[in-house]
Length: 297
Ligand SMILES: CC(C)(COP(=O)(O)OP(=O)(O)OC[C@H]1O[C@@H](n2cnc3c(N)ncnc32)[C@H](O)[C@@H]1OP(=O)(O)O)[C@@H](O)C(=O)NCCC(=O)NCCS
Image (cartoon, rainbow, N blue to C red; front, side, top):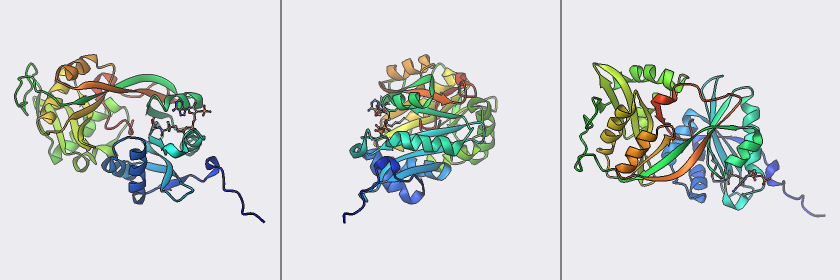
């Protein structure tokens, strides 16, 4: 008699993740050379739905991903990670097939790394855009400390968000993201180290958050009426941190990208914006400069 052979990895069950899986998720990120980002995983596992496959050797998770639902019109897939020791055995494909079954007819969006893109193409996702990551120490335009209130050459005034700005942020965000994401915006005050709004004549014209990732601070979301307002928000946020800044900027916003590079940030990795079951992302890309995180769509 011999013991039954173990299930092939691709046949192992997919289960829902909870906040109790946070450390295993962070371990997976680390395994793939990403920041552990427990803070980001915490947001994603509470605002979204995590799926994972347990490592058959009891070493935490073999794979994970998160689905952020925006109702019947859109869901975003993010943080698809397979432990390096289990790579190229069909596990990512398995998880994605599971996600496609779970969301049914709901269209999907995601930001694909170069490693992930071939899989998504095989599953039927199409590229509709791209983002460019910039990272580094931000130098304010006057060479000294950035003014937290007004960026040079811009009429946009910014200030830290107050609790009663949330309604106006949600109203501003709706036509920009294209779908109500109150469930995420409401979490920004707790999630971010700094939340900044831009206003003109008493009207909100933009908002942006700054949150910690590894030894950097990430700017996202970055929503603004125009590039000058986006620059003012970034300048104000940068003045509140000593850490390097990181942002995943929609590549259509060339002027902002060029300015960030002039200000000392360096171009890094790119991601492809991909959709499934929908021609393009909803909303207004001209005012959508950077996502909250590339894991939330
Ligand atoms: C991308 C990733 C999730 C793929 O996981 P995986 O379990 O190894 O992928 P699978 O075995 O299911 O591969 C499915 C298909 O994807 C493609 N693929 C997977 N890894 C690839 C790689 N490193 N380079 C190019 N194509 C790749 C192949 O087409 C593969 O099919 P094949 O093996 O029949 O040729 C994994 O490499 C990973 O965790 N990478 C780091 C994090 C990351 O970039 N995640 C994607 C976020 S969008």
